[in-house]
Image (tube, rainbow, N blue to C red; front, side):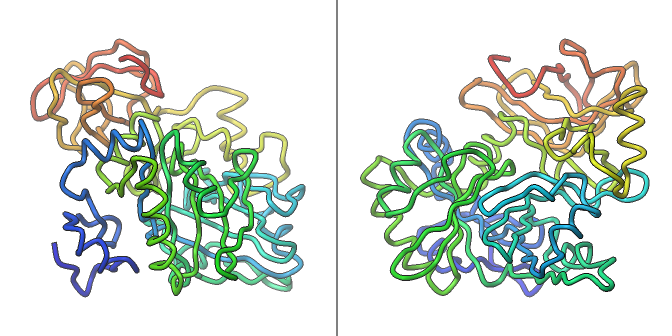
Amino acid sequence: MTPTENLNALPLADLHAARGARSIPLAGWVVPAHYGDPEAEYNAATGAVAWMDVSYMTLVTAEGKDHIEYLNRRLSQRTLAMEVGDGLRANQLNADGRMEADLQLYRVDEGTSWLIAPPAVTGEYLQFLADKYVFSEDAKFVDASAGWGFVALFGPRRNAAVEALGLTAPAEPRRVAAGNMDGQSVQVFETEFLPGAIVVAVPVAKLHGFVAKLDAAVSKLDGRAMGFLAFDTLRVEAGVAWWGIDLTEKSIPLEADLFSAIHTNKGCYPGQETIAKILNLGHPARKLVGVTFDGEDPPAPGQPLLRDGAESGRLTSATFSPRLGRAIGLAMVRWQVREPGQRLALATGGEATVVALPFGNA
């Protein structure tokens, strides 16, 4: 696939093309789907190490002495106790408790924080949401997506690859660690959006040089580059919902068990009343669940799931899992059909069986 004027090209697009990448569109970007052997890429990501270009992730920087306090008022998480190196998951909600953005926040230094989101939350939109109610506060939000490249490393040898580059992964999940390569500052962190990965953020001007060194380190560890298809299988197996795929502006975070994005004892923020009612008085109307299918061919996402002829949910993601040897998926279903073992009919034929997340030996 050739990029068009309506799709963004990754900073490493020339490298991906030279390696024969098969490309797909993703939230306004052209990204590598695979490099000829998606199963080998999956095997590297689960048995050795695989690196993936995730420079389509959105980055907005936050600065100013009031930006942490301001974000505390706007987001579903408590940010006031954050120190340099801390990270947390958070949502921007509307007054009805529905999601406007799903993001992770990192305190990269004393005066700066990073807001990182999946690509369906554009930098322009996230910047708008972030500074929407800034009046007299000293808080400034800037879309910095174009200035940084992001590379994610997956697999049991990912730490060894990071160390071979002279970098150190954060000692704990949800933290960010500053590093240095050839006199250039980089950031190393983990994010719930990329389950099991260590991410290195590199200034775009240094990205090609960084990947050349990364390639050399990864090849010594029996690793390789990986496209989005293998990652999507890892994501679905881990039960991780993505904004723009499984979550939309109609979603409430509790439908996808995003408890890590919500501080239950925090003061007022947009949508808090809805979240509090659900937590204290009942449950959401819908629930994100795993589903399995008979056979190896995953059905098309987006189609309704039926029970007794009536729509009871919608398939949001589907893939073939080499680990499980079958097709699996994620679905947003009505609360009444959330229990494992429920059988739902696909609108295009066949059936899906509800299972608990993350996928075990379903």
